[in-house]
Image 1 (cartoon, helix red, strand yellow):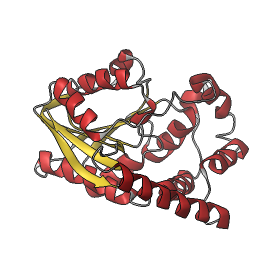
Image 2 (cartoon, rainbow, N blue to C red; image 1 turned 60 degrees about the horizontal axis):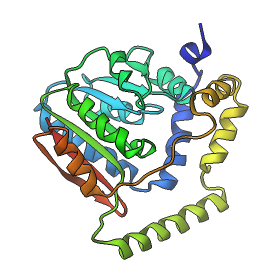
Image 3 (cartoon, rainbow, N blue to C red; image 1 turned 90 degrees about the vertical axis):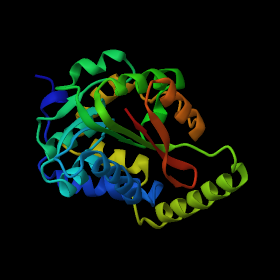
Image 4 (spheres, helix red, strand yellow; image 1 turned 45 degrees about the horizontal axis):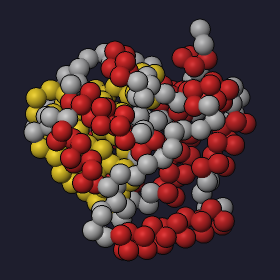
Length: 255
């Protein structure tokens, strides 16, 4: 079997901590984002054990927090990155971790069920082209139960605040650069250098190169009203802003 599907790291908690610190340098309010997502789950499940699709879930940051808050929760994590999937499987167990390409509509076939209470995704879908994301929203509606919720938190500027958003973004960049320069946290590139040096994860870098060709697609940041309109066009009964922080926002949509 391919190492893409079998590789497990011995100390996944260390990689989870390393990933969290690296990500928090870019997203200082990251835990607030996760709390907003999980609050939405609580709102639509009324205390029941939720069934959640962790979309483009990476190392499992959302699923781990979901399980801590809702001990009976069941999550399906979907991602494409071989390295991040290896960390996720090592942390969450192999069941419920799925390799699938969201760039293609066939990704839905990889899911174990299509009756989720919630679909949660954080700072990931901006790698998709707008046309593909529009179609993905419709596909996600199809895997939610009636009354289920989709929450996407990502780079979603407010068109009404261009100057303030630009200044907030610049201040955040300055703080991040200072932390990187001081060695307080790893940068994105430095984190991947550590991955490359790891005996288990390093060999997966070649597989990752095959998957992404060295790069993701061009990063986009459609404004928040674009996302709300796309969700309504996809057939969601409600769509609006759940949370906002600077140039980022969480939009929620009810099926």
